[in-house]
Length: 139
Image (cartoon, rainbow, N blue to C red; front, side):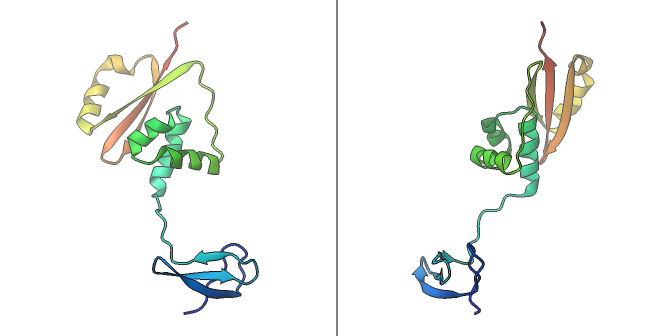
């Protein structure tokens, strides 16, 4: 097997330096960095990243996003930092959300009173639907 490239400085001068947890360890001769290769990290589907960022922009808290999507709130915070997302100030309205299946969504939309006096967005969330509704604060 060919020696890997150093992940820190991209140098080709790498030597074997023992085995840790049944994985080969390497050391870079240029920067003295120790590393292992073949580490498979947990990769989250970009669909969930996009949904989490959309929900954050709509004013839903990190913990609520965690409950809705099943993704750690720390991951959501890291994505917000990574993509430099800034949620707009929401002083005139309050977002609320509901998660419904298709039949519940159809019944909700049939009732005419539910559609008045607020903005609304419906998005697919796996096999269910999420409705975010903005009600303006009455002064």
